[in-house]
Image (cartoon, rainbow, N blue to C red; front, side, top):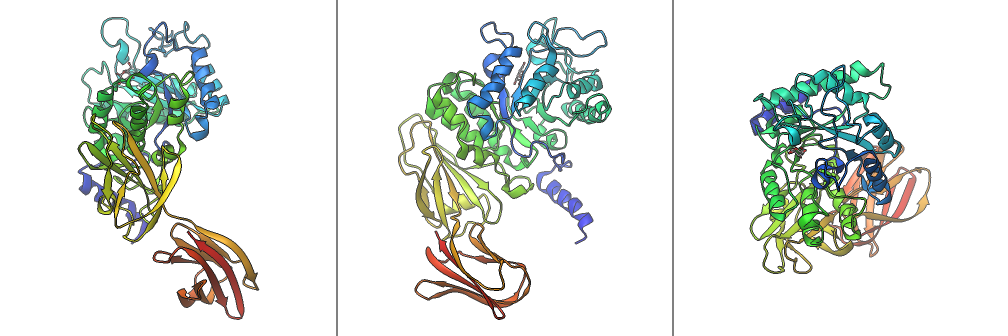
Length: 517
Ligand code: GLA
């Protein structure tokens, strides 16, 4: 098919599937994985005397990203939420930071955050006032009727991430207001280029709490959209948000994320109940949700820190399916409901798929053993076939369990505690290259393990014979062909153990031993 028409055909197919007319996520290279960082709102709130948000505090938060190991595992956005602004606009009608809290202004903070290798996020509102100050008099200014000027300001301040709320919006349709801001943010990058050497596009977080179905239009407007009302630090609120977000999996794709709100891990019901803290984090990871810590990361306990920086869990959240931008395959799904929930998320891609499996004891009763069938795992797609062998990584136990073979059921190794999860990654075992001991003129030739395949890369094409023999001399694979430069052989069905790979090209021969795990 003519390549020029492929995007159009894909768009039409998606439109038919999802009933949407706007189907292409923003292709600006931003938010290719769910954004990770911190936001002030959940714990620090608005002008709380004992939980002050000011220049020093934000700098300390940026420092904590480094000292607590958060930056190392991918947290990058240091985001200030509502209540940073001065009540009145400046003489030219521009936004200004409240000098009582931010005496050196926002650019100074952005510079500090950037100097740590991190990114800086800020909050505003499409209406006349921000949400915390919308009712009554003396509200903090929103963007309405100042859109371009404010967009220019955010670009000039070096903002990398902007959360935009929906209070005091004067009954304007959300899609209209949010699109206006998308366009002014784009224009601002061009308008400010001469004055601001580092003018750059901004990650755009739409925050209208799931009103007016942002999942149906958000992908062409911003990079993520809230699907729910505000989360609180109560377990019930977290589960409510989760349940509203879960059925929206068809709308998520790379660069366009459902946002069930920021994390409460380390706060309220999730401060010392580590089962719930783990579960909250695990559910957000399975849901490909943004991971924005909402606790005071400067003083969090080691237990909470270990939850937030669990690399195996974060890898599940950040997996890009090998760059596949198809809608509806990247967000994990609940495949079994009830007291014992089962969630599955496709990883790495639709071929050579790995899977994250989460077994969740939602009940408040007692620990239970939870199982999932191969068919339930396979129901989300990918290329799992009965007989395929997977290594099992226990995400929270931080250990490798016995391999699992598709076809049977997958069961938690121990009963899962109340409100706790067992979470595992089903990994494709690597093919291990042991040694290369014969190589005549065809070298260099490269034999590699890539998922459940052996890939042979040669210098030249030409007639070639390939034989793979186990140590008993039994031939596991044999073929003669005009070999392409890259030749790939499936190892499915080959038993674990040592093999010898022979590649014969005319009078030349290459031999390598490999171990199939
Ligand atoms: C709204 C948003 C919250 C927070 C507050 C700030 O309620 O949904 O996440 O930003 O406004 O006022």
